Length: 193
Image (cartoon, rainbow, N blue to C red; front, side):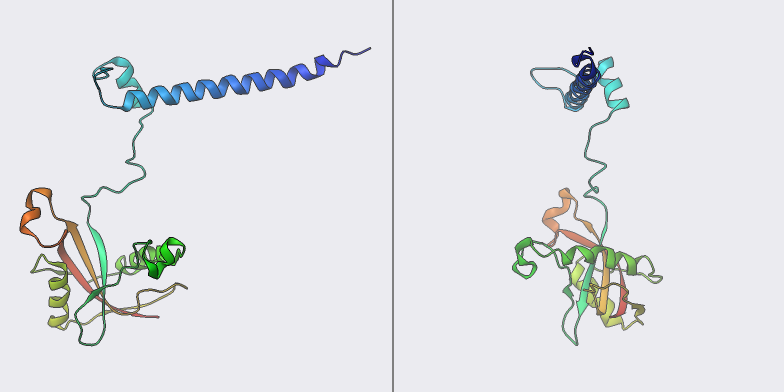
């Protein structure tokens, strides 16, 4: 007569092996997170061989997931008739026009703008650091807009658009600027949807 518990033994061994592997993984992850934290009153982690090895082999940080806040970004301004250029950004998502975050259509605006900006050949340096003034100056110069055809199904940037490259105002100069970002260069686009 065969013993039935012997058939279950390989399954139990695999379960124990999986559990021990999970515990080892969690312990290693906890150790690497603890080693990546700065020193505090309870533990001095600076300079030890364990810290250097841990941070070198398994770094923990958010740099992979986030964009540096000091990088430039492109802001679209829409132009209608003779009115002043107005920001054409669809976010923040929590606004009522975006159904308080339920609508995700505005998430396509970044890739749409990037598609146009990557093809821009003529940029004009801004004479004013204020974004609105730079966009208006570009329109007043009366340059020829660069023409694009929208290929996206959720087009949000149609007509005359001013693509404005901006950088954040440095903290030490925040009291000298009325806006949080300074204008660097701009391009005039004509997008047909």
